[in-house]
Amino acid sequence: EDQVTQSPEALRLQEGESSSLNCSYTVSGLRGLFWYRQDPGKGPEFLFTLYSAGEEKEKERLKATLTKKESFLHITAPKPEDSATYLCAVQANRLGGGSYIPTFGRGTSLIVHP
Amino acid sequence: DTAVSQTPKYLVTQMGNDKSIKCEQNLGHDTMYWYKQDSKKFLKIMFSYNNKELIINETVPNRFSPKSPDKAHLNLHINSLELGDSAVYFCASKSQGRQFFGPGTRLTVL
Image 1 (cartoon, rainbow over the protein chains, first blue to last red):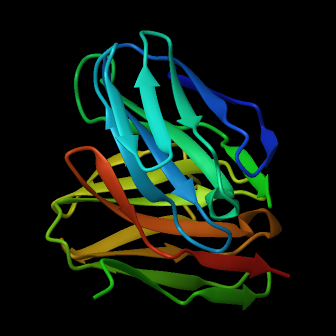
Image 2 (image 1 turned 180 degrees about the vertical axis):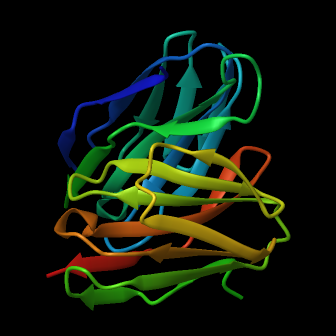
């Protein structure tokens, strides 16, 4: 069974204090790792897709990286508006072929204090 | 224009009732999903439809029945609601792995 574990569960930062969120995964046949941001009362919003180890993607203060076992979401000099829950999801082959099942981690709740 | 929309936004009902949640996407995607998000924010997939055909049903009780009249719509009907069904339900559509989520429906069963 595919496993996705995110850490820490919650993170409090001061504005400008850089940090990283972790997403560890155990899947057979990774077909993509995805990062989403979820604000309270809203649906998750897509941030990045990573497909192979060594790949990196950047958007403003966020940078996502991927290895064969985990992904990191680096937040550089965060601002209060970066406060949200960050979700990691993997998409992998099913045993014996068939459709992909997206599996989500439980998320990291980030609060950035001014 | 809203890409993925859900109605209603909030749903409060009594145990034992039957209710439906509607979802529509205007993105032209072939694949749509229903997710349940519990109080601890864990997103668990319930159903997936690809071009109107059910392709995943992840051990969801048969009180839950998805219905797709066309590939732009995926509705969720729930019979005999139970307290444990209280959660936020999200509809999503997918293109090239990336998912587009609706705003969610908060279901409260009293």
